Length: 280
Image (cartoon, rainbow, N blue to C red; front, side, top):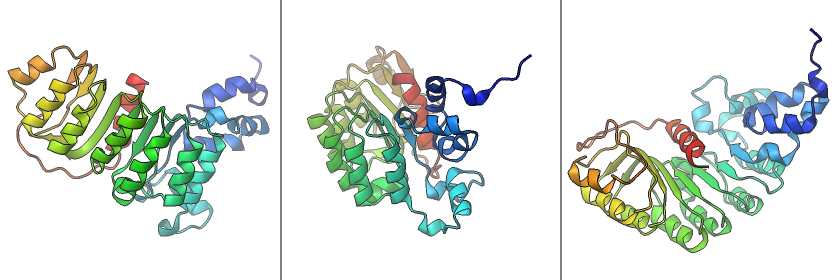
């Protein structure tokens, strides 16, 4: 059998493969294989799905992209240039990015740059830390992402403000993913105010019964509702009846009790990936 010449593979085929491999491979592995592979990684289509590492998470895992950068360039964990790194990666896409999961720390200038350079964004993932530090800024920037369809958040902080912008500017918005949070009356009302929403995925989220009922009564076009591991409501006849028309409905391990849980920093990204595959 003749040995395959990987260097001479069609560049369009390479791009179709590389756009799914992830940021770490695109930056640290594939360009080092050969010149043609390096050239393929420069194609903007390879940078349409951008999932940034979180420096907070990377301190706990030994083989992450951030760890590679820190060691390769003798950087300090506390001085990793997240803003410059974000700008560098986003620029590779030449304004073609459609999916973006931002790091936990990002400066105002970096967020402004990203919002201008990602006009076609359809999926946006925001961590707990990023929302706490830049929630008002992000809420104001949502108006620039008119094609946004799905929002994944690590906490419901600033949910009302973000949904106000979504209602005004994002006519194609159809999905919310939320982990490790508390949906109070105001948050439930914000969700219920978007009756055309089709996908709601919650993990480790606490609802009062009436707030969940408000959402179910208003969002009659739901196609997916995931309440796995949620708490605070009784999964009884009333909820079953209101959810009976939903094609995909999950309520495993949910309970009426109020449970305390530690934050698991990787749950947000994993949940976002699962739902993204389902609806995008």
